[in-house]
Each structure stands twice: as C-alpha cells, then as structure tokens.
Image 1 (cartoon, rainbow, N blue to C red):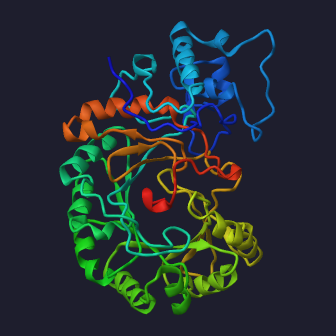
Image 2 (image 1 turned 90 degrees about the horizontal axis):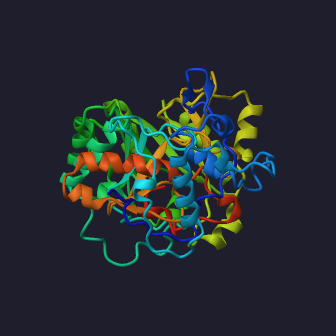
Image 3 (image 1 turned 135 degrees about the horizontal axis):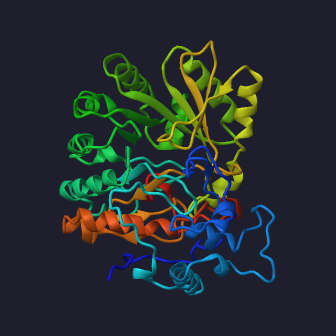
Length: 437
C-alpha cells in the first residue's frame, strides 16, 4: 500500500479554493474545451477529481455558484471517486494533524511517465529547487537580522539531487531553477548546474542569486550549461542598495553583469522588490538600465510573511503603480510561455530590454501556476504559501526514481488552486529564504 509522505499540516488550504478560471496554461479536454471545474462537474474523471472536491466549498473570491439542494457532489462521482472524496473531506476536517495519509484512496495514474497535471488542469513543467536556505545578505524584507542559527549540515547531496531531477524530468519538467537562500554559497553549485543540465528532458537550467562575487563564477557557470540567471538588484543607487542588503557592492555587481552580457549567452534578468518609498526612483533607473541592454528588470510585489508584517504594511505598493506608467508610455504586455515563471513582461520599440511585473496579489495570479518547489532538505511545497510540506527524502536516499515519480502524481489532487496572501495568510512561509520564493 502506498502512502503520501509525512506532511507538516497547519490548517490546510485544502477546500478553500474558488472555482477554477481556465488559463492559457490549461490542458485541453478532448482537444477542444479546457477542463474547468464546471466541465468536470458533468464529466468527472481522475483529472477532474480535485476540481469537484474543491468546487464544493468556493471562497468569497469564487464565481457565484451553489449546489442545488437536491443534488450533492457525490451524485456525479463514481464509487471509487466518492471514496477518495470522503477520505480527503475527513482529512480537511482534522485540524492540527501532524501527519496525514490518503494512501490508496488517492486516484492513481497508470502511466508513471505521464505529465504532472493538477486537479485544476494545470500542467506542472517548472521545478524550483532550493539547494540551501542560507543567505549572506541581510535584506530588510526577508532577513533583516541576517541568517539565524547555523547552516544545516544535511542539505541535499549531489546524488540525491540527481535522483530528484531524473524523477521530475520523467513527469514532464522542462525547466529547473536553482534557488536558495543564496545558491552560490554551495561550493558544488557548478556541479549541480552541470548535473541538472545533463538530465534528459530538462531544457532550461536557471538560477536566482544575489550576485555576490558574480565575476568569480561567470565562466564556470557558462561552461556548466547555465541558461538563465536572475540577480536581485533592489536599487540602482549604491547607498540605498547597501542599506537594503547590508553590502556595499553595487558598482562591482553592475560591472560583473555587463561582463556576463558581453562574454556569455546566459539570459540575464534582474529582480527588485516593489516598495512604496523607492518605487518611482527604481522604475526610472530600471528604464535607463534596460534602454540599451537585453535584460528584463522585474518588479516583485512585496509579499507579506510572518517575519515582515510591520515593514509590509509600511511599504507595500500596488503593482498598478508600475503597470499604469508603462501602459501610458507605450509599453505593451507580452504573452507568457508555457514554461515561464509568473512575470508579465512589457516591451517598447525604443528599448532593447524589458520591464516585468510579478503581482501575486492580482486576481487570477495562480490560474496559470506551473510550478512545484522542493526545499534544500527534500520537502515538496505544493504552493509557496501553503500550510504544509511533504518529505520525499526517503526516495532520494534510496535512489528510488520510480517511487518518487508515483508519489509526485499522488500529490496532484491536493495541490491548492491558489494562495491566500490577500487574507494576510502566508502559510508556513516565515521568510522567503526558506524556499527561495
């Protein structure tokens, strides 16, 4: 009998989701109609199982919908699906449970190589893998007092990462992003890049970094096969950069990034947290930077976690501050690719680069989610701001690729439809260094 691995469960998001709004990332049903919750109501299948169970309790943000009094969701389910629904309903009502097992009651896939598709018909082709939660920066919105405690000595090994990537590649993952904390802290980061890049099926290897000593790493990362690099640049003003990060290194970082653009084919993007105090100055500086460089500068809407509430309420700025300016000055939004991250990117005919916006508080932000996350200790996060995680390390230690593939499929019916940031609920995410955002 198979079981879902140990889950840290704290008032799970399960059952809170609204009805699914089909997105460009949706899987087409029978080649014609997106498999939405409404369609699943009339045509229940293994893939529509979660859409049915979630649509029974839509949140306030959901489309107006009510079950007829004489009809219950179970009326549309097969006996097998009714059993699964009953099991998960019991699980949702058990608050504070330290572990849960849906074992053989979860609908199983007969094809271990099938693409990962969640209960809302979203194909998951993008893995964000944290290889350490340690970071040497002291950014006020994440780790204002620096990393606390000692760095764990049991981070995923090269061999465990190899097993992990093989399993994800088998279920359709095309893009892997290495995150931290700060991934370059690991001395074997170049080997990790090379290993992921060599895995059949993986098309893109990306990494997110603070750029510390970037110049030292450029050649090795290029030779290892790194395709994309995202660097955190919260300000183009040296004094502000130092105040925000604790490091006086902006001039060197800017020089290193120009070297990367001149000497490699690594695609470069810059990330900056959108804060009310610095938003306008950052936008003007970003526009100047991308004017002649093939770089995307992406503003990330400040996200509340349990460790930054005071700063969040003082500095949170709406993404419309940036997007309204761009649209009124001739910039146009571009379509996202299937394996892209959540940013909406804007282009202008007079600019070589782009400006992007990641707006997690926007309506329908999660509709096209294509991501799963794995922590540096081997725990799967089905959503960045979910209430729990699942320990899969036993499969990595036992080099059990087939077992892990099956387990990943078992997670699909319980992946939440969306987060609850708008309700000031960041789940177990105390700070973003825990899983790299």
